[in-house]
Image 1: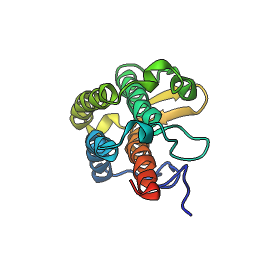
Image 2: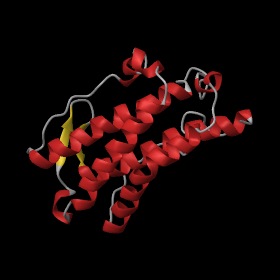
Image 3: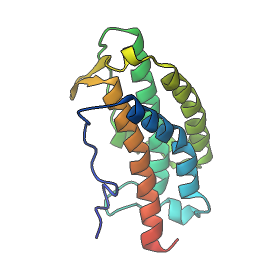
Length: 173
């Protein structure tokens, strides 16, 4: 059986990153909202409240988590672009997933993700080659480069979309 927690595999930081690879990741980020919306299309309330794996978040929590996470990433990019190696504030994603807004209907988060990605992709496509090595400091994980963070969030969108699509496949939905 495939890994239910990491259906596309764990993220690994690439050592070499080409401009072509960055363009591909930006395109993946641009496609994430439509892919996530497509993954949940037609699901009923009971299905949305089904965990994607034993002990995991529900589909609903996963959908609300993606814009939460990507909003933080967008802010981290902007901080790194405008400050010298800023220290960012992490957030407790597991606690965020338990807040009342993570039980809301999906449309607010799907629309938020679409609009957030519209702005984020505009920013990403505008960046000159020279800024991709800029960094921010994560208090727990250390220094992070923007190009490596781009890779992470391209993976992140695919990762959570695969949680939903692999559950649908396993359940025959």
